[in-house]
Structures are given as structure tokens and as C-alpha cells.
Length: 288
Image (cartoon, rainbow, N blue to C red; front, side, top):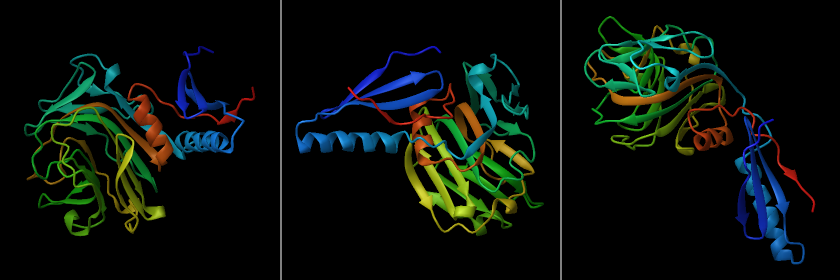
């Protein structure tokens, strides 16, 4: 197995070595001072911190769709699904160039993913890395759901980048029944933002993470994902026909069946969009 040079972190008198082997991360407590109660406590505290950051358990979600624009040739009109071949297509002025999906915010410019791509999930995680231009009010980063005959969105999940907000609704029009988790932070002008939206109605939860940190949570969610009617699956376009389009660049867009845990979110934020670390490994103690 090919091994990357370990990274040594010093926490008081406890030293931790982070071994990175292709897709396995292990934090090993190498040495703790043994001569004073204070130093033993510091070493134990450091081990507990490491265990919290990189737990032994694998996060309970399955990657079902991955759109990695690093892998697309410049000028491609197809967003290749590297997992399930549920490919998307660029629309309007959308382009794939320089390892990014580039959406300029003009009308009709978005990524169209297949209908029904999230059907059958009881819990769902959307993970992406994106950069944002000047965001208009009511634009969608992504939306999975339907549009009624009057042009109103209905029965959907979505993310509003101008307000740092995610929501689920089973109503028509959708806004009347939205259950939200909002950070009230405008992502306007922010670059290379790691965003994880976790829709977990079985746990009555909706959560939003940015750059590995919990930004918003709602623990009173009652609308199930079965209420979402995924006729349209958009990136950069609203399910409301009157809404503006979003100017943004996307490096990677992932869909998971299941709810990602906080430790996996933090690990992905640290490792970046170009790789998948599915198992962080175990915490071991090395005697010496």
C-alpha cells in the first residue's frame, strides 16, 4: 500500500501521528508524558479529541451519485455520474471548463439532472463544493421537486444560497409548507465553499454544514422525503418559474442515500472535493 508521509501534530505533551494511506485515515496516540497527573490528563484529552474528530465508525450513508467536474473535458455538455450513470446535461449558457461547472446566472442556464434521482430515499445528503457570484434574492442553488401549472414550486427540497438556507416541503405552493434550517448567511462572493445539506426526516432533522461546521439545524421536521415529488432535478435553477437563476461555479456535486454524520462532514471538508474517504479508520494507542 502506498503511504503518504505522516503529519505530526503536538497537543501539549501528547503527540499524534496522522497516517494517510490512499483512503484510510488513522489517528494514533504515539506518546503521552507519564510522570505527572496533569500531563496524563492532557494526553487523554488529546486522544478523546482525536476520537471525536475521526471516529472508528463509518458514516451511515451510501454515495449514490457523484458529479465530479474535475473529470470532464472542457466544453463537455454532459455531467457524468461516476457512480450510477445518471448523467446530467448543461442547459443555456452553462459550460464545463477548468474542472468546474460554470453557471453565469442568465435565464435558462443551469444543470439538469435526471428526474426521480432522489426517489425512494427516507434520508438524503447533498454534498458539494461551490463558489458564488452576486446572488439575487430567491435564486436556488439546487432544487429537487415539481412545478405546478401556475409556475409555483411544489413538493420539493432546495437550498437558497442568498440566505444560507435549506428546506423541505410537501405543499403547493411549496413556500407555504417549508420546514427550514437557516444560517441567515449570504454566500454571495464566497469561493470554494464546502456545503452539506442533510435531510433526515426519520430523525426529525434538517441540517446545514459549511466548511465542516454546523451552520443551521432544525430538529422539528415532520415532512417525509416521500412527500417530495422529484419531477425536476436542478442545479442553479429554481422550481418557481419567476425566480432568477444563480451565478455559481461547482467543482463537485454528490448525492447520498442516508444521513451523513458530523465526523464524516468534517473529514470531507478537510480532504476536499477530489477524493472520497469512506472509512476514517480506528483510533489506536501505540506503546513506547
